[in-house]
Length: 401
Image 1 (cartoon, one colour):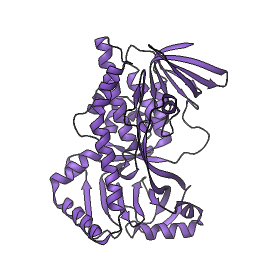
Image 2: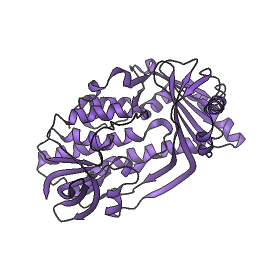
Image 3: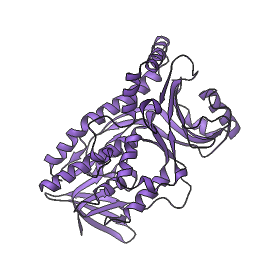
Image 4: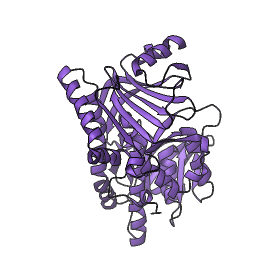
């Protein structure tokens, strides 16, 4: 049996960020993942929105400077509107808030490669293997991992489940979740357009659901749409798909010329009301999965690990047991408000802006117009989406835990 202080299950963005945030502490840490390396064999063109607060955290960890300049793209303006782009329109601009950017569109593969590159310079042990089973003891959680050399047991004073929405760690701990299916799927695709607006992102609210456009530099955008007919969209020949997407989005980026792979996944809201057990805690999508509207998922997960890192660092200084229920409950109490309010915020946006009832459509468009005229409301909205709402954990203040 291999013995560590902390075992992290899940080598994606959240798991690697946590391992790196703890690497400077006097702890032994093991990160396990089926791949345990950035995906090297195929082109991964997935992107996501990185909030300003998350950039601070990655800068603190020495990861941001490792990203190639062409792998992240600043968002200096966000246009929120109904499809027409006329009545019911709000602009949020970075320069009005005194910021260099509201957020960044970042390539998944590039960020994962930067995280693993930083981890290689630490003492974190990275093991390739799949979570198989779990035995919780009084002073340790014992994970059985299946790998190429057969099963291996790893013991940790704390097990962190960072293994995503369908978390095997959560299932082994029998932690219940509440789940809501939106009855739609997300369709994600990168497209070229003829009239790009540099560094401008769009959030359109259509009768079908939210439709976001995120700038990728030059003439490319990532489109994320919500649809009850995502399979039909995915199966369309490219010319018909582009014409239909252009019609759904409206005339704000010119004509749509070419597109890449079309990916789709179910849209759900899922949350573990108490994502911890004896010697174990869940973070990121393993603890809560959000609708992608407003791009809050990974950013919320990064705030999880920033707060957990603060909690573990403080218990080390106090010589407390960071795997005890007392300490884990304290961490969860500190996260409760942020998780609940962010979940309610994204869920509320979907419910309000997917509604087709005439009077409500008029009311929400009037609200968008009013927000554009009220700088204090606009600033509050921007602070929330940028992950800068106080109190902030150390990483989001530019400090190490």
